Length: 121
Image (tube, rainbow, N blue to C red):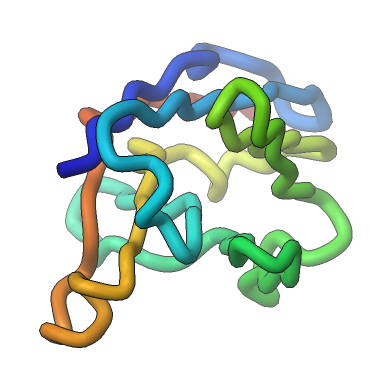
């Protein structure tokens, strides 16, 4: 089992920046990939960015060039630096962690409780 706790959300004006953090605990040695997803009201949850245990990153086209995912292995923490924020970035942001076991079973992995990001125009 993996537990995830997010922090760092809040209210920011368009063009501003925020940094989200996601601390993992439990069976962290089994994690193969970490990621950030978001869900706006009335919309499906969507991928924002992922980072594998090998350090490879992937971003959705909507955030590429503005958001950066990074990690601190010593702290078992993944970050999402969000710059040049737009009102359409407003959503609940969820941290995700996958393991070999969840991937092999076709499961989405473990989720944090979510943190609200609101960008005002």
